[in-house]
Image (cartoon, helix red, strand yellow):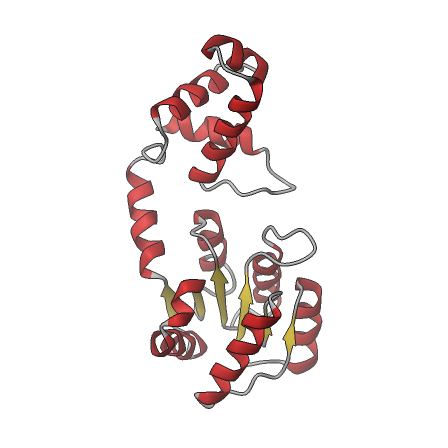
Length: 210
């Protein structure tokens, strides 16, 4: 089962998998269709993008985790454009802990490696992209090391409870500049948009822990 909102990539993956002897039961372009298609076809493995319509946040991942709650042994290989620590953790903690994979989309271009990862996950193994592992280990040492000195300064003031306007006055910059700094901080701290969490608070917690 293949879930990917980009028609071009979806068709390319379908052809690639067929070349290596895999049969794609169905392809879908959004998370709701993925859940329905899995219920209908009962695939051996699901390959899904993280960000899908309608919000392009983490719909694909949430659908995959939900599917594994219902079917703990369903193998799932997630493809992502970026390294997102929370996404990796949610996936590895889902189901019975076996048959999961998290690869960056760039890895698809390394055809044999990608197909090998698919085969391993389908057999119950766990595969995590080497670049993901490298970045996770680096972030574990200091989640703030990726921030610039100015971004650390902004985050320190936010941790004091100051608003964007107050930070702007303190640093003698525009409020728009502060907003851009905060957006960059949230990205570098691996805090993607979500409906059930307050990213600013999570950023402050990361700062306090560090």
